[in-house]
Image: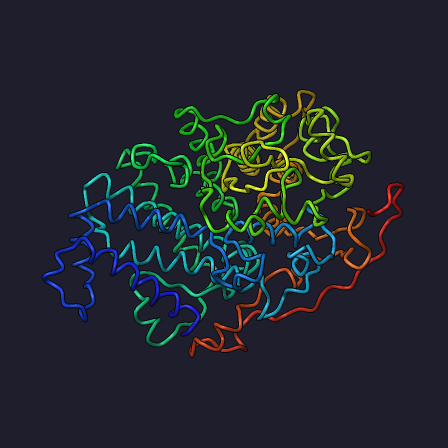
Amino acid sequence: MKSISKSLSVIGLVSAMTLTGCYDMDKLSMSDALTRQQKIDAAEANPALTRAGIAGIAAMFSTFGQVLGEDVHSDFGVPALMLGLDCRGVDMVSRNIGYNWFRTFMTFSDCNVNSDMTNMAWNYYYRQILACNDAIGSINADSEDQTIQFYLAQALAMRANAYFNLAQIYQFTYKGNEDKPCVMLITENNQDAVLAGGCTRSSVAEIYGQIDSDINRAVDLLTRSGLSPEKVIDAKPKRFISLAAAHGLRARINLVKQDWTAAAADAAEAIQLFAATGGSPLSLEQAARPGFNSIEAANWMWGIAIAETDPVTTTQIVNFPSHMGSLCYGYASVGAWRYVNRKLFDNIPDSDVRKGWFLDEHGYSPNLTEREQAYCSSKSIPPYVQVKFAPYQDVLGTTNNASDIPLMRVEEMYLIQAEATAMAGGDGASILTDFVSRYRNPAFSFSGSGDDVREACFQQRRVELFGEGLINFDYMRLNKDYDRVGGGFEPNYCFNIQAGSPVLIMPIPNSEINGNKLFLSSANNSPAPMPSPVQDVEYSVPLD
């Protein structure tokens, strides 16, 4: 199977070369392939090799031109996919202009086997999966060495994350769809057979079975090892997964599976463990400023570390801040702005500091300094554009876009705990009220139970997680319609897509159809045409 096996052969070669470099090379001829046991022996003899391999998997979150090519400026790794998923949704508005490299995502003209969306998702995550497989197969699963246990946990957790995201992109949510075909299940145990003969799609239940196995093992290994990323790596340790972040990932998974008690317990444990290391949500004062640009922030549990020397940075414009940022140089600053849905903005109370994450109808935000506000005016930044994300090192108008990218923040854990507690029959309303009133809106109060709390949490997630690549999955797991009416979209892209529409999930890319002899096009998700627009509302403030 070309699509997956091509990545596998490259990753396997690189891994073998890395391990051989510090192994006893006199025992191997240049034509010999390393056996699994030789890899295990090499890893135990020199754990630094394993650390380098795991760091390499973490680095795979951010790549330049690895799937679509260097001329396609939407190809910069998982952050591009996060932005693309948000553009596909309801809450982030953008315009169909040449500088908007994510316009096919926004227009829903990407539900086909050749689209950027499906090629990016498939390749980004399967490359990570295959690298994780190689690492897992090179580590002694029974090792009592704490460092080895920590590294094995990283590979397992990252593989769980990759399959979790693939499952949500290529099939509808877990509950009620357990028997439907999902994606290909490839582990360290079957990838050689897959390379030789291909494979078919596994069911949603089978994929989640692997996800559960991986994340449960990761949590167990991190608990047994007693190690945190800070004890293993010096530079930007949150690019590795801590025990708190592993519980956070499991909380996300259990929330999708509607295992309410487990989701609430994992979220609470994540909060407690994170607090023990000094982590905490942004305070009211901290949230009332642009931010979300540094992995060192006290509220980040896991993130993508970006260096000034990384290819995505040295391009200046092929990176997340270029496409998302309003206060730095890039595609956004020349017209490809990211707006907030107008109805969502109007529903944010004035007492909520997050309303200032967006410019109002006059182009003003109370969260900006006088200098920042003047910058917005000088750049003619339109109303409703987001100013949530600060520029790199808070340098206004910078051309250096080396900002880190958040993958998980502790604030999400409070919202998971509140929702899951309520759905399990507990007092989720108090958890939600305590969090929002303490950290975001002192005037907030909520009473209710069950589905009412669930809906309130969803509305909070729409604001809190704006631009972080997560809210599209919430629409899917909650079976929400994609109703853009009144949101500020251009008339041709004002859709009201019903939950369950085929356009909401991706068909597996054509490269997999051509390269995998056991996967027939008839077994694929059906491509879907761009939806038809619906009548929008009139605006007192015109579309820019």
